[in-house]
Image (cartoon, rainbow, N blue to C red):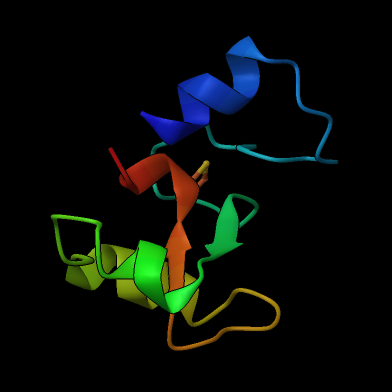
Length: 69
Ligand code: FES
């Protein structure tokens, strides 16, 4: 998934993925372009939406990176 890609590539986002994809943080918050957001096949779960509510700068095309495959 996306989180692995970011970790694999050593992309340095401070604190990104702090909970390692267990939906216990919002450090993997990503804001997609609408066209990219529309390509994400799965809709956010309630758990993801709850965590997104805590994310800084929430937008209508926000997802948690660790939940986007
Ligand atoms: Fe913590 Fe995604 S890495 S919610």
